[in-house]
Length: 339
Image (cartoon, rainbow, N blue to C red; front, side, top):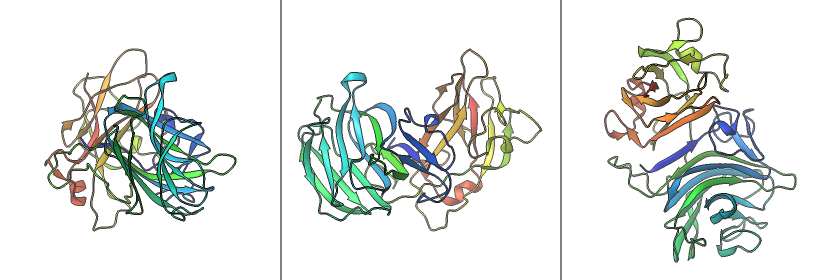
């Protein structure tokens, strides 16, 4: 696949549900700070971190609105524990320029800096960073609002691993905060979807969070109350143990109708990410996966703490083609118990 992760910050209020580490960041659901929808991530200064399997290359997009012109915008970390290394990061400078840095503080290497006045306080700029390879030499390209502002080469693999495994967001610190919205993270592997490789810059995208608007079929899980299923899983933010559906039988599926609220055509849909907020109700083991149009996705093990099972689809798994807005009239989404 090409898309590794998407976030709108519009459908939940606890970063730990979807990211690996929250650090000193929160989700603002007021609708007053966001770029799209009602939510954004606020960093002051450290932001959330997402751990994934090691990747040899990457491209990310990030709508960034800062209260001060300083510090990293986003970056890529390799290693774990005391061996963590900031392989590549894009930093905002006091003159509104951006720089590409490699290596850890306090002595990182600056591979290059852009012209000034590209970032301004209080305004969203869509910042994309592409690392062609974590290598020596490697290439990094930065775009802001769709325009290339920096293209540098150098050692993008300071620790020699040739990969990253943590993506992070950052803020300015020392009082001011930074807002992040409409995140995407891809590797540079062709998705295999005709006309939709998703292995390069996607542009200044917007992510729209959707919740179920109706029951579909089959409905093999059980609502915690009543007989309607979708109403128990559509609350923003997720209600925890207040409303839910439950099931313990492998093979059981629930399917819901989803709409396209807020999306005005014509649009290009680069991908759809399904998020299932779930936990075990008692000690034991159980695996669930998203089910899209009767096709189960990748299984994930649950714990006794709520967490989001996430899967990104570069294309419609039913048709094998790029997503179309009309697909939501017939394709249904929901959870399935896989083991």
